[in-house]
Length: 212
Image (cartoon, rainbow, N blue to C red; front, top):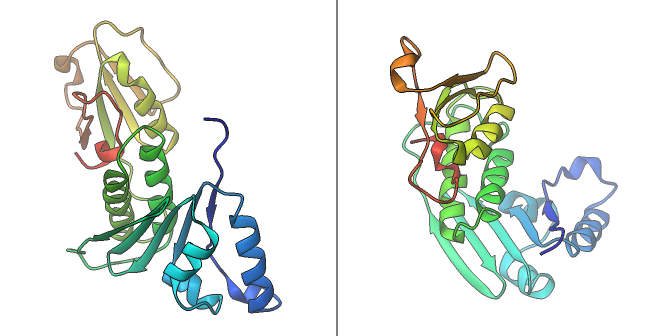
């Protein structure tokens, strides 16, 4: 309950006067966070060696998501280490914003009640999807949603730039801009193409709707 603080190391060592100052500052400020994201590259840039020793020493009661690269992810969940390994099928085109996409997807699902393993899986999937395109923005898609109960996820994806198609004969029509559409039944869609369909059978609006 209450405010949760999340911290991403995202170390750019050239912006610091020294590794020692960067290391001390990062450790100090990350200690006030509840969830911390770090990578093997961050640890190397700070001149640190063993990430497990660092985590055990400084973050015993926190959630640490540690990405080692090549689909390998460790999660330190308040005393327990969880290891995950994912495989990249497609060749990576650009890693710009992959970490941001991973972090955002993990947090969204975590704070919506998903298990840690599902948060990691979905976050990696979104990061991998971003890596399939040049630049930070993936192509805009049409998202089809059923029912007013899922208006929350529709609004979230609309804020991220997707075209929203809401279909529900009970729902009061909503209109935000040209990226928001409302239909009372599927027959009204006519020539509207759909790229993504919501996981409308779930009680929790999980972010796997990005890839359904």
